Length: 541
Image (cartoon, rainbow, N blue to C red; front, top):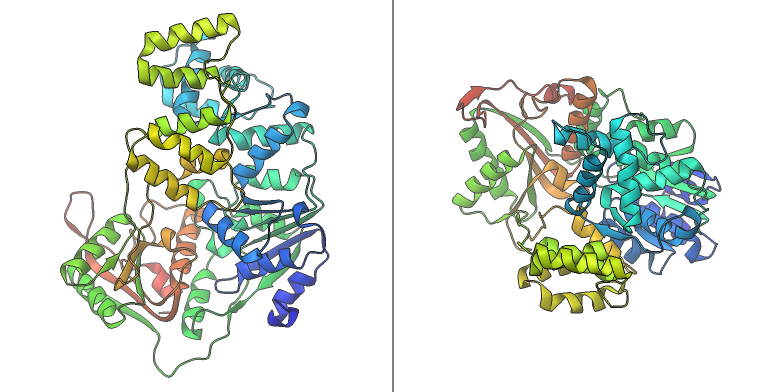
């Protein structure tokens, strides 16, 4: 794109020569456009550029919009796994690291506890404390001694779990033993959702130019480890650019959302500037009802009037289920994520792919043998192989995904292959079998399969982030629903307010907010009184 096709704030970002850039991108401000443009306007070799996104789907979109191959485009876990593998010799790691599931790693952890002679009364709590230990810390107490032995044995077996990848990376960075990555530019998307470990990795990586983009007002993944304070602290150190122009929503929606989020203290102050003109009609509506059933009928009427371009966004899955069922009963075609369960042989598929990346891994091979031929046969074969210094699987490593899937297909069920291929199709170009394994380990079995011709989308607010609709209906704005009754401390309340802000700013033209005096508590206690949400008054509605 030509420079004059960006607005003034976007141009300032693209023209900046700073080595430490933070872009605060409000809703509808062209965040991905600026991220992609910042890559396209770089003059250095494309292979010296790394872009890190929050999901594989986002990485695939960024890669497609760039239009050419760069050095890396994917998630942080995939990036760090490549660092560990590419620098294995310098870091004292095995030449190959197989990504294994937590169940496999837990067998090693249990062995460490037993061999050190510890008696564990509360296994879950003990393992959680071990999991919190960082490699490189000096072991002092029982949990840390177990952690040190666990990591030693895990690495000796040439294995690493999804959660261990970042811990190992930050441990080597702290020691100063991680070689500089082969990149001049690092660009990170959705920085508001970075965890403290993520943030430390980005800060410690020896890459000259760093570009980070996100919006603290849209940080809604605290339950996944995200910590908005990471971005707030970065704002005091980096060259900061704020993208305020909202190209999505009409002014009334922008203004109401701004009034709401202004009640948060932990934020970078900004006010949206709507690019669209105000219309003559009212665009933001607030309605109260006596019962939840009355509110559902109102939701139905709004969806019927805006069918084809409307979404109902809820705080909880329970309310989303209730809304979807009611709309379906009344003749509207509902588009919803279909909750899948993983097939029984899902773990076997992961083990087979893991062995393809490291055929000499006797631990993984023996687990597969145990599943197929029983414990005695597997243990005997493992013991014999170890005594003779041999490997159980005589094959060459496979990192090409298509070749791996061809080998996997006859060994697992059609249901498993369908789900594996769905994950593979969401990966960015250049992805490997190890990237697929990371996706299989991280991704929850809630794939979205939405019809393209439905009348209304029903979704939780979390699942709707990054999307937009002409009309958005927001039921359940009651104390105890939004904000949730579980969130009583100030930080949690601010995240609930950010969640409401994200919901409001999904709407382009029309926004309908509602509450009901009496709702089903969802705890088997029947209907109870629920006060109107404080967020309604805070939004000036």
